[in-house]
Amino acid sequence: MRYFAPPEQLNAYFGSLYIFTETADQYSDVTRADVPQLRFMLDNSGDYHFHDGTILPTPEVCLLGPTMGATRFDLRGAGRVVGISLLPAGWIALHGGDASTLTDRVQEMVDLPGYRDLLEQLRATDDAEEMAALCWPFLLERLVPLPESTWRLLEAVDGWLMDEGSPRIETLADITGLSPRQLARLTNKYYGCPPKLLARKYRALRCSARIALDHESWQALCDDGRFYDQSHFIREIKHFIGLTPHQLQTEPSAVAQLTLLRRSLGGDVAVINRFS
Image (cartoon, rainbow, N blue to C red; front, side, top):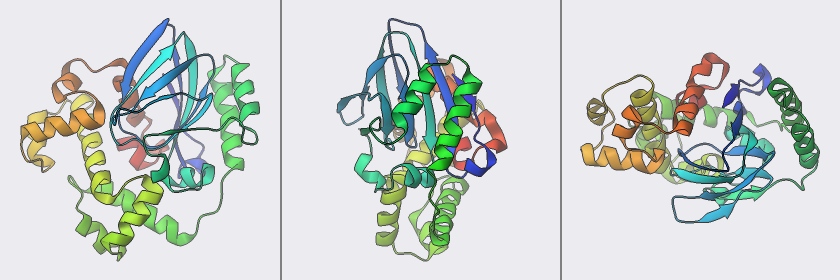
């Protein structure tokens, strides 16, 4: 896995661009709950196994909606995948619809203008820098201006998710001046789920990074994250990450390790993408 930070003018819309390469005849692993992803399958095919039991084939150009639980994927044959993580503003730019309609689901994008051409250009090169250079102008062309009110809301929600150990809906309501019902509608639209589930997701993602990268004791994090007890903590981490806290400490899967390295991009990517 190789990561590329976006150009400055894109870092409010997109997280990192990554190129994943594997050489096995069959490959399977688990990815954590995450933001939406745009993925170009250059050489291989496979399936997504979502946490609700749904199994869907991977399209050639795959728009994977926000995921609310760990997702297993199977790949058939050696190959390469080029992916870009989408922040809420990037979701609006590329999809424009309610994110909750594609939560834990996929959409084929290859027949939309320009996507097949980009797929073929990516397939024609082995140079990672060239792949990234092809993708950024393509994405830049698709940006749509957002109202200032939308930017303010996204900044408020992102800050709420990052600033509290266990984000409380009351805090977000105070920050935004919106009712719980309004917040649920807006976070469904931009993040794919209501505030309570969104808070649970990012609490688990932050804790997993602190366990695997900062080597903090997961037992100590139970109190810090306001979990009911250790059993609750283990269930939440397992649901959203796909591994137990002990596995994160001692035997994280290859993809889990590589995904967590996204945080090492530091200030070149948006805070919510760096620490989640």
